[in-house]
Image 1 (cartoon, rainbow, N blue to C red):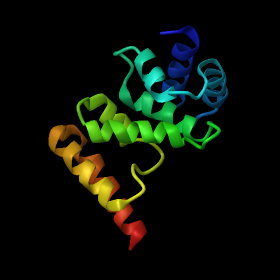
Image 2: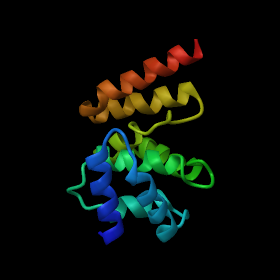
Image 3: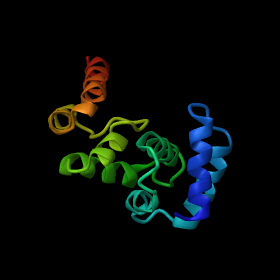
Image 4: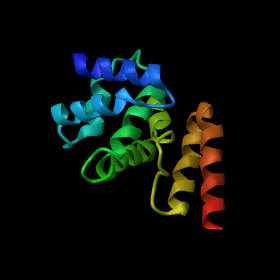
Length: 137
């Protein structure tokens, strides 16, 4: 893991849930990495010891920092939900500062699979579904 990524993740972990210095570090990280295939490259560079909530916070900050307002990053994390073969990736995807999938029906379909495949994600999946249902009521 490169030094800037390591420092950024440590700062995010220390500042949770109110980020200050993290935003500047994430901006520097974005300059270093660029936006192309960002989620996959950052995830791959995160050591297995980095807790998924820290990665989710990094990605949530990136959603507000990238030129496309996180569009490419959220499409990648939605693909992780569709594939539903990595519990850590699923937990990152369901803990961003945005709802996965544009359509509520699609979101329900994939979150149901995630909850079934990874019982540790069930509460968060149900929470997202309930929040989205309220929003669309």
